[in-house]
Image 1 (tube, one colour):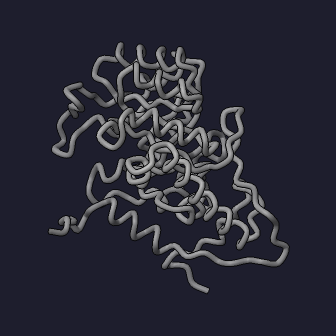
Image 2 (cartoon, rainbow, N blue to C red; image 1 turned 180 degrees about the vertical axis):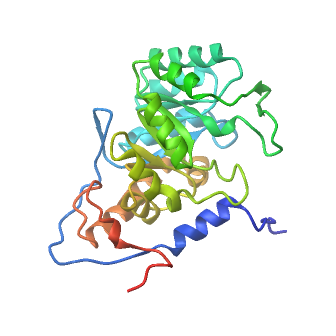
Length: 300
């Protein structure tokens, strides 16, 4: 039987919003585009990254490390979500430049330990998934038998100060949180609703232009949720994102071909991104004109 989708399903709403955005074509003065990403002092081949996934062993043996091998081969950035210390060590041992995202554990000592471990592993950055503090019933969340709690501005500032690595906050979907992240010294944010943590959540791309006006290029802005193809990445970059993360779309290729499947997927998405850039006179990912994007409300 087909999967039942609620009317307020945030992932469905996000997909529909992506598909409602149309793109102008511009050809006069076109140039060969560059998809290179400059991030935290390093250069990558593509702004399409792997999302902060976890527990991929059901998809492929040693799924996270295998995904990291594919991401490294694609010249992309790897993100790692929840997992044991040994798993992060296996991921970083592949050579993939990795951003470690930590859950908002109830005991902050656990958070500080994981920050320290990310540093020891040589991660590119570290951060926190703030939208996992509560479950959908309005109770404190429990993830794999681990207790979670919401974090205050002061706690986030303490996490930022605890590391020399850039500290990233994942789960920003409002101007208010964007301002607080800046004030706390955060060095990157992920605009995300965690694939529908609540029903009727704003699509990340709908609020992205508002959030980028708050950030004003002071720190990188990343986007995830429903990044399934290169055109999705193009639309996000045009609306102000510095890079995007693909998540569930990698499951099939990872399961079928392991690292090579992941590499092929990222390469194919990047090729589609480059094609869109070439057809819109976008010379690099920093110069994609927002006016290329037409929303349903925009009129001639």
